[in-house]
Image (tube, rainbow, N blue to C red; front, top):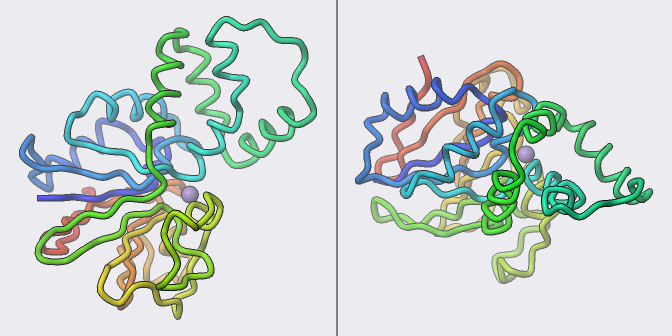
Length: 232
Ligand SMILES: [Mn+2]
């Protein structure tokens, strides 16, 4: 079985493991995390370190991981390169990340040794911007935010990182007709209080960001039968 989840945003690792257990997730299954593991909540780095050890869990990049990667001076320091004051550009990138909830992640990285920080960098640099999987006779496109300026004839590789990771689809937006797009990034309560904490299913895309960044819990969606699993 193939499961997806998204936007853990530092959700407590033990609670996430309990959710996997509740969904009967086992070594024979596979899970895709659609980005934004880090930032806002306290457990982002802890989650990343656990996820990267799991042979049957893959990460797709979120805009928060992309913001961390854009602060490349963090990894240069971990490589032992001494550096002078941050450039204006680096300072702006750091401020953008911190303004978006990067503080707890930066603090947790400060407690990691250099090798661990470089392992995190490798893991994030290997994470794709999207993936396609088949399950239960359907094809799914997995992407963090959406498909800005969607055109069915446009090659997926022609979308920019910003198009894929920062997009907030309108409820009326439609994507591929024969591929179901699974995305996160925009907490479902953004579309109305009736969606709070629940998956938002539209004819062509499903949003599974149930708002862990703002006190809700993440969910798991099993792609084979579209069964939804929620934390207790
Ligand atoms: Mn996001």
